[in-house]
Amino acid sequence: MDIKITQFGKRHFDKDFGGTKILDLTIDEFERIIQLETSYEFNKHKVIPGYAPFCKLLIMENFTDAKIGSMPITLENYQYLRSGYSARKESELPVFSRWFELPIEKPIASHLIIVLYSKEQIEKEANENKELKVNFNADWGIVAILGQSHGNEEPMKPETMLRNALGIKEGGSGVPLDRDKYLESVSFWSNNATVK
Image 1 (cartoon, rainbow, N blue to C red):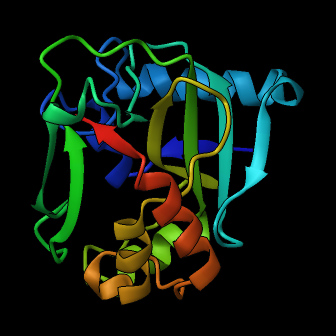
Image 2: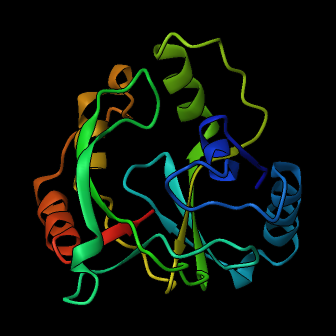
C-alpha cells in the first residue's frame, strides 16, 4: 500500500494549524515512517473502513509529538469551550464548530488515526474543485491525522458530515448525509470537543 500526504493533509505540519499538529518530523520523514510501517509491519496496525468506499482509517501508536485532538467536556474545562464559524481553506463555506482553547499544554496523543483517501477520490476532488489538475502519485493519500488518547474511531464531526453532503465544490467529498450516523455523531460531539 503506497501512501503519501496530500496537499490538504500537509496542514498538519503547519505550526499555526488548529488541529493535530506534527512539528517534530518533516512531511518526508513522516511519509517514510508510514511507508516502512505499512510495508513491513502492516499486520500490527489496525486498518478499518472509513465513512465511504474510498476512505480507510489507519490506526497506529503515536510516534510523533502530536497531542490529543479531542477530549470530553467536563465542569472543569467547560469554561475553555469556544465556538464559531470556520473554513479549512478559502474555497470552502464556513461551518459552525466548537473547540477548546486550553490554558495548559495538551497531553501527547497515544494514537494517531490516519485518514486515507484513494488515489481516484483525491484526483476527483481536486479536479472537480477546479484546482490545478492533480495526478496523485500514490495508491492512498493522507487527508487527515487525528491525535487521540485511545485507538478507537471517534465519529466524524457533524459539521464535517454536513460539508461532505454539500459536495465537492463546497469542500466536501460528495457523500450524502446518513441520518443514523449523523445522530450518532451529534451524541458523541455533544459531550466532547476538539482541542486547539
